[in-house]
Image 1 (cartoon, one colour):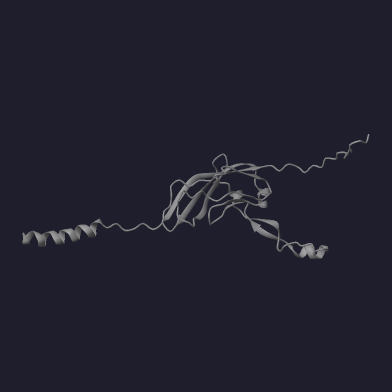
Image 2 (tube, rainbow, N blue to C red; image 1 turned 90 degrees about the vertical axis):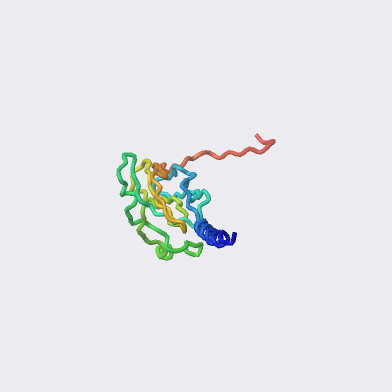
Length: 181
């Protein structure tokens, strides 16, 4: 019986060591998605979506835009090329009463028509989208967190539509007071 005691103890120790599993750090789901899919954006205007639905993935999610394709399947470099657009460099306030004060707060900057925010994956369409054609575009992203990274092909779509021209409609304003004709 003593022989078995000396044999059982080392076997038990070996079993305990090999049965231990290294804890996995974090979680990155295979089922990430955008709720607003497609994101409808008006050409030349700012539009943003909600961030990626994480499906329990460990936050923060770091997102990289890999490719954008048009409806023919060709890479749409027009959406990932930077263009110079007018921007506000500072807040315009009610105290900015002269053209010189306003001009000092205006400038230009280089922006892409479409981007995916690197933290959280929010889709962003900028005023630089005036340089893009209207239509529906599909894109791929890479998502990473403390657990690792995964590529999601055809995860989302953005639909860029033409802006409606501004119109002014003049209507007559009539009022009536009870008891008066």
